[in-house]
Structure formats: C-alpha cells, structure tokens
Image 1 (cartoon, helix red, strand yellow):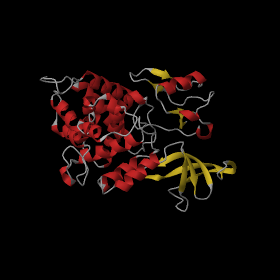
Image 2 (cartoon, rainbow, N blue to C red):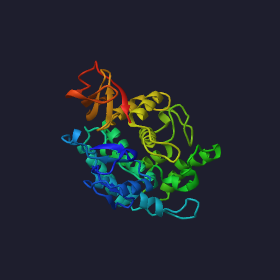
Image 3 (cartoon, rainbow, N blue to C red):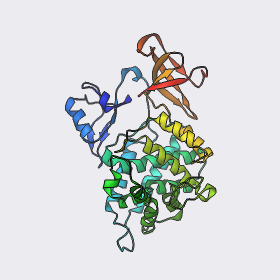
Image 4 (cartoon, one colour):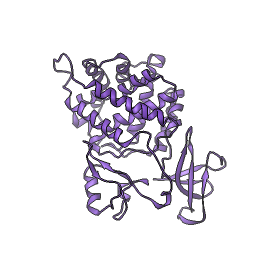
Amino acid sequence: MRRISLDMVRPGMILGKAILGGNGQVLLNAGVEIKPQYIIYLKSLGIEHVYVKDSRVGDVAVKDVIKEETRQEARVMVKNIMQNIKSPGEKTKSINIDDKKVLQKVNTIIEELLENKDMVVQLSDIRAKSDYLFAHSVNCTVLATLVAIKMNYNYVNLRHLATGTMLHDLGMITVPENIVNKPAELTEDERKTVQTHSLYGFEIFKKTLMFDARAGIVILQHHERIHGQGYPDGLSGDKIHQSAQIVGIVDVYDAMTSERPFRKAFPPYRAIEMLMSWGGEFFNLEILQHFLSVVAAYPFGSHVYLSNGDSGLVITNNPGLTLHPVVRVLYQGRDLAPHPSPYDIDLSQSLDLTITDVLD
C-alpha cells in the first residue's frame, strides 16, 4: 500500500485504505477496484491523494499510530462541536460542549499513542477539502500528544495539551468562509481577520462548562513565536507556554502538508526542511527536534533516489532517525530501469548513502 496523487490513479488499481466521509460514512471501502467514475467522484470531493495496494511493498505491514476508527470519531466530534457553537458575539452565558465525550476521546487518543509511542507517524489521513479544519484539529492532536509523550509529559498534562489541541481552532468559526476558502493570497485586512481566531477561540472556550486554563492557553497562544513574531500578544521565549509551542509546530506542519484552496500540499520532506530552517527563529529547537524524531520525512511508499544512482520505495522508518529510512531498491538511473538485483538497505546503517531526490 502506498499513497499516490489522485492524478496518478488509474482504473483497475485496488484501493488500499478506506475513504470516509465527513460524517464517518464509508465512501469507498479498502479492497475495491477503482473505476473511472470513482476517480471523478473523489475529485469532486476535493480529495487529492489515496492509498492503493502495491505488490512491490505488499509484504510490509504498516500501522497508524492511532486506530482509523478513533481518528474518524474524533473528526466527527470536532465537526459537530464547531457546527453547533454559537458566535461569541451573541450574548450567551455558556456554550454547550459535551465535555465527557471530548475527554473520553482525548483519553482514547492518549492511550493508543502511549501503546505506540515508539512508532513513527508515516500514514496520512485522506480528507476532503471541506473537512480540512476538522481533520486538521485531530491530526494536530495526535502529533502534539506524541511529541509531548517524547518530552515525558505526565498523563494529566497530556490530557490538557490534547484537549487544547483538539479545540485549538475553535475561533475559525468566526472567520468568514470567503476568507477561509479564498483561492488566492489574503489581503492585509483578511490576514488580520484570520489572526483574531486564536483570541476568539479562547473566548469561546471560556464560555464552556469544560473550560480549563491549562487547555485554554494552547488555544490562545499556538500562533505565538519565540522571538515575538506571532499573535495575538507578540509573546516571546518562555512567556509562551511550552504546550502552545508544541502545537505551534504541529499546526504549521499539518497545514503545510495539506491541500489548501490557495496552494498544493508540500510533501513531508519539504515541510520538514522548511521547519528545520525556521528552528531557533520561530520555533524552540529542542521541541522541534522531538517533533522531527516522530514524523517521517519520507513516509512509507515514498519513491526516493539514492546518491549511488539507485532508487526505490521506503518500507520502514527508524524512530528517531526519520531522515534515514529503510529503502527497497528496485530501479537504476533516472529512466527507472529494473534493478538486476533488488535489495533492501537501511540508510541509518549505511551513512555513505543519502537520499538525493523524491519522485512526488
């Protein structure tokens, strides 16, 4: 199974991972043969990538860090919360969020991640463009919690961080849809409107019966940057809560690797390169290193070129050494001539070989 662009999908391929709708319904099941009308249907939903079965890596099992069922239930929950919340401009004494349901889902995510804390995140969820915000909230929760586990957060602190991350974009419901979905660069006024979402999200969260300052600080500060370049308060250094700094990193990464109305998604390795270049300027270097240790720069199935002229597919990612995966070498040269003696090579053990390029 490997993730490929929908533009590269051809009729007859076998779907490797089920595609689910925004309400949790199965749109296409894993194992179905892809037909021309399915491709048209998926494009109409704004789905840009799918997983297909690939005999070249069929013997390699790949597992997500949380169950697909857990991810989808959390996504539907966030969607329902955002759709049911009233505008903070209305005079309401409180806003109703099912705190038991949120905490139950947060606990489930934490427990599954604790069981899989030594795994590397290398599977992406398949999301329609209309479900971006809800999927983004859940994906950030998974990534931020996994980073916090690496940083030895205790269970209580993990729960506050995960709750705040799950709801970190609550304030986006106050931003007009024509700005959120604008297929072009925002004007300065539009950018300022978007930048109000962290403060408005915090104010919305304060009106809920489940308000907790330790979760709320994540919502309020996740766009602050360590040298004061962020918003809403232009905080710097240790004035930014550590949990908010974690979420700031994963928020940028997930946004960069997602399709947006104004640009295509960046491949993971490119997003990681950019984050590394911003380390120390926008992001805490220690936190960034923990993040880089749990996210695959070259996810399972990536076609990579090696410095010796060979190329092949990534089949395993080494925890803590995600820039040095295990590659199944299948080809020689840029014309992808079949390799006479295919082999698997662990780049963490063969430091004389490096990845020079990726076939997107």
